[in-house]
Length: 311
Image (cartoon, rainbow, N blue to C red; front, side, top):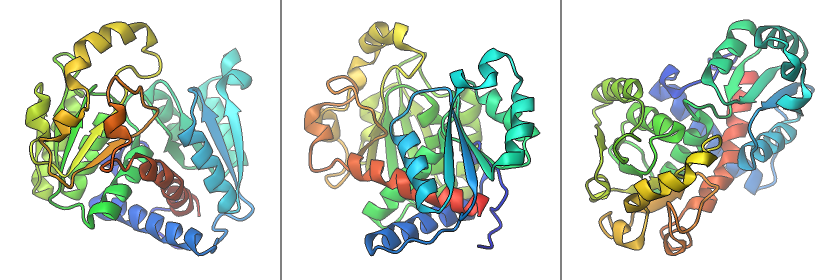
């Protein structure tokens, strides 16, 4: 399968153009349609994919493993504690060796620098399955879901309410790149990284869209097409959970907050959800929620990413 994306690393969405992002999404659409009619092409027949997971996972791990299998590849799940990394082998040595065995490396890590080090020392593509900085595959699946439900991306208005975490960072970059207007509402001290906001703002100028960061959730959701939230304490922040709940309670995605969005606005959450905290049952299980369609699309977008980058 000839594509200009073959051999590329996927570490952060800022490294991909609008056209490249849309190519991945469109291929995800194709693969989803193929699966619905029982069609399955083995774009990665005979290849192997290493999956390094420093962090626990449900959707990311399962979707990548199933994606590799359905593409005809073999996925090797590598828990960091079971590798020589746990005993002091360097990331660079690990990357040099693994890239001689496998067609690509999917890595879910704590520190984004680990991904940079893997990419610098691997001859095979590195795919970011989550880091403290970004979660690009999640947002590719989100954009696929939004276009699937709304018919377009350009000009739509998206609000993200809650912790300015890695998901918020990647949403800023992805939305700006495809021409969506995005507003992030976070408590003071919990906003997205300033350098990410600056980069997204520069990208938005080129795509004729807008970026807003506010501490007022009502401002962010006013007349928007999409409302998105995520957990208030990510993995590694468990000790801060109680304090974060106190600070972020006004940012809970409730029916009252949703009433300020457009009547046909959709709700997204990357899961797992802490029901009753960042989102209520009424909203998560309500008619505007596309959360489980969003979760399903992780599989189709992972297949697209693997096929286009490794095929």
